[in-house]
Image (tube, rainbow, N blue to C red; front, side, top):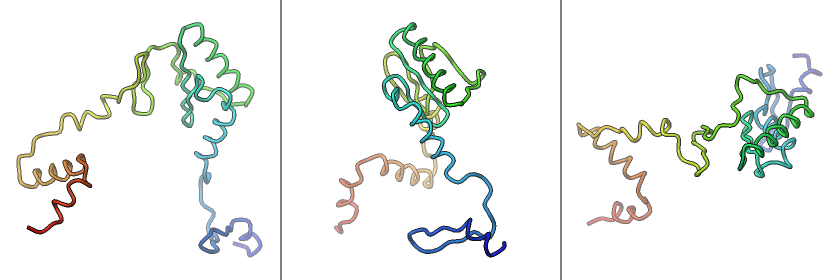
Length: 155
């Protein structure tokens, strides 16, 4: 890299000077930047009738008529910001939706059963090794701070 060119790809983090010898591929902080953009353009509607996580925009409403208005506002906001939505990835007017590992429906929110299927169907231990693994899982699930005095004290 030419000496003058190196200046454009160097940085000064808190722990010292760092300079790239090879420019990294991809966009640095692209997800955080995109999330900031989405939060900014939807700011007036966030947690009023919209949840946004990266490119997942969830509009929730109390009635079908209200939902149509909310979706229209979402699409208008995207249009004004020169962003587009892929129609084949959109779902409209459903009473239940899977969103970030949860199932959201009119009565509330629950964990997506597909996400916890392995835990629900955890097999019983059959060997000492499996029993030890189960012991460690049990320790993680209990209040470890209450167990510690009993585990660390000598008889």
